[in-house]
Image (cartoon, rainbow over all chains, first blue to last red; front, side, top):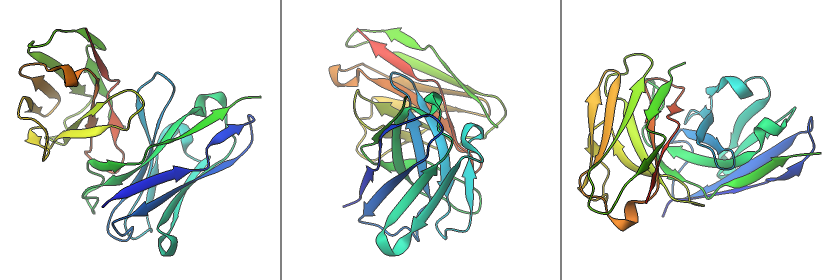
Length: 123
Length: 106
């Protein structure tokens, strides 16, 4: 069955970097677009980034553009979120999530989510 | 970027109530809207896609409607398991956005 499992969260100082990983099973990363979505404590969902199934295209939300990079290693069934210049505003639970029908028209709906990993940016 | 304005932010409801949640898009997005349910400490769950299509396994008391810029999620008769936070999401292009969420409370 489809499963997604994030790792790599933790406490990090402002200005530092962190890399999150998401290991998937039950499907191929070559077939589905993959998102990162975050949620600050007690707040709503905020989309962060998406990568196309062929790995050639990625898009970012304005608050993270230029600081975060989504990537993948299909051989390891993993996607990553490299985060730089972290601030307190980046403190969130980060979810990796599968896009059901990502194609040339764009992203679609998210049909599977991981359990999330908490990133706390604090000195 | 397309903004999704969701209302209300909180709704006081009772079992058996008919519940309506609204999302308004900042520009026309045809019917490219989904709705999710999220319970505390859990990942969201897809309920509705393409504005009005019910996801497999979701109870029929959930329904969605709308097109263009106005969208609605309706729960016909609220059940105890439905106490949660609900989010709309637009997917008109590569960048997706969520509404701010509507929390149902007793």
